[in-house]
Image (cartoon, rainbow, N blue to C red):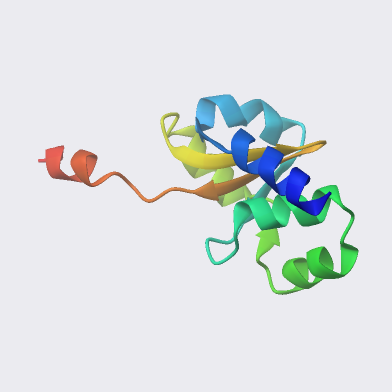
Length: 107
């Protein structure tokens, strides 16, 4: 069963820009996942109510809600892209690095 959940989650993992994610932030459903964690593993743990793992990640600040500063920053960057995974009722996100091509085009 764990394998089926992980497979389904891996297939639903998609990039999403801030404009798509903003409504989820407004309903307080966004959770930022540390880049040191595997997004599918975290999604699987949440889906299967693995509270010990989830609580440990929260205590280590590897899972957290976006701060007001982060939300403000992303609101002025509507094209900011994240990896996103929906695990009802949450949307798990990991910030993607800024594209090197956009940096190269900056004067």
